[in-house]
Image (cartoon, rainbow, N blue to C red; front, top):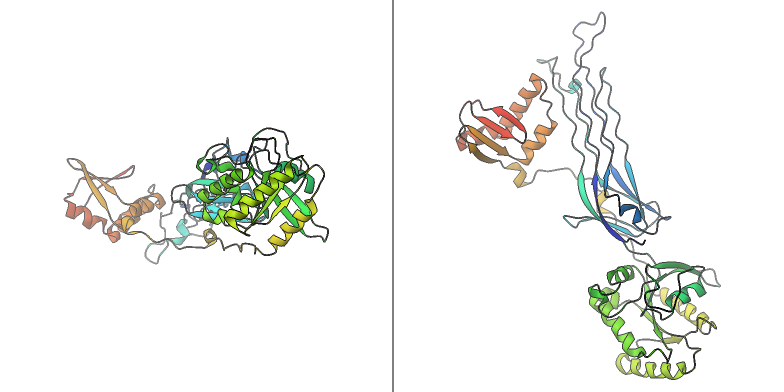
Length: 430
C-alpha cells in the first residue's frame, strides 16, 4: 500500500526529577546536600532514510513516545538522559505541526534529520540550593515534561522529470524502456496506483530520476480519481513530460486531453503549470498515428504558438526515444536545482512567556474556594517538588514574587480560603 500522508502524535521524554539527599559518611558531620540532577528526556528525531518509499510505517502506529530521563541519585550523581527516539521517514518528507501548520523539517537528502519534539530538562537536585544561611536545603526540582505535538507528515517525490498525462497513454511503458524500473503495465485506466521512480543514465554518464505518476482525469485537482495522490508529487519535479495518445482507435481527441491536463495543473497551482514542459505523442507506430499527430500539432500551434516542441515516440519500436531523452537532459540543464533552505526547526530559541502566560485568571468556584489559572504558575508547579517543607516554601515565595498573592488579594480572596491550581490546593494566607 502506498501512503504519502498521515498524522501522528509524538511525545518527547520528560526530564528526571532532582534528588533530595545528604552526605552520610563517617567522620564527616554535617556533610551537606548531595542530591543529583535528573537526566534530560529523550528527543524525537525524524531522519530521512533512502530505503523507504512510503509512509506506510505510520499508518497503523500513530503515537510515538521517547524515553524519560532518570531521576537524580544520592552522592551527587546525575540521572542518565533518556534515549532519543528515531523516526525513519522517506526522502522528500515534509513534517508540519498539525495545529500551527509550521514546517518543522523538509527532509530532502539521505541522513538529514530534524528534532520534531524536544525532551524536557532534568530537575536540579538539592546540591544547587545550599546557601550560607541554609546549608541543608530539602529542595529539589521536578523534571520538565517533554514536548508533545500532533504532526502531519507529507511525502513528495524528488525527481528531475515527471511524466504526466491521461491514464494508459504509455507513461509506465516509457519508464520501463529507458530505465530498469518495473512498473505494473496493463491496458486499463489507473494501472499506476502509486508513483514509480526510475534512474535514466545517458551515454555520456549523466543521470536523471524520472517519476511515473498516476494518470490524471478531469477534476483531479479537486480530488476526483486519484486526485492529489498524483498532483502533490509534481511539485518537486524540475521538468514535466506531457504524454498524449496518438492511437486513432481510442476515440479520444489528443488536443482536448492535453487541454484537460493543463487546466488541472493550472488549477492546482501556477508554479506547477509553469514548469518547463516537453510534449510527447506516444504510439506513433500505429496506422493513422501520423495524421492524428499532424492534427494535434496544428491545434497546439494555433493556441500556444511555438511554446511547445512536440516529440513522437513508440515504446514498442523505440522510435524517437533517443531524441526525447536528449531533449530531457537539455531542458534540465536550463533549470537550476532548488537550493535547500536552512531548517528553522534546528535553531535554538530561548523560551519567553507570552502576555497570556504572564497574566492570571482567577475564578470563584464557591464560597471560600477559588481557582487560579496561569500557564506560568502551572509550569512552576510542575517543576516544584512539594514533598518537602522547603519545596513548599520555595513555591510560595515564587508565587509572591510573581504577583500571585497581590492578584488574589485584589480579587477578594481572604485568609483561610482555598486556592486551586490545576490538581493542587493551598490555603491562602495574607
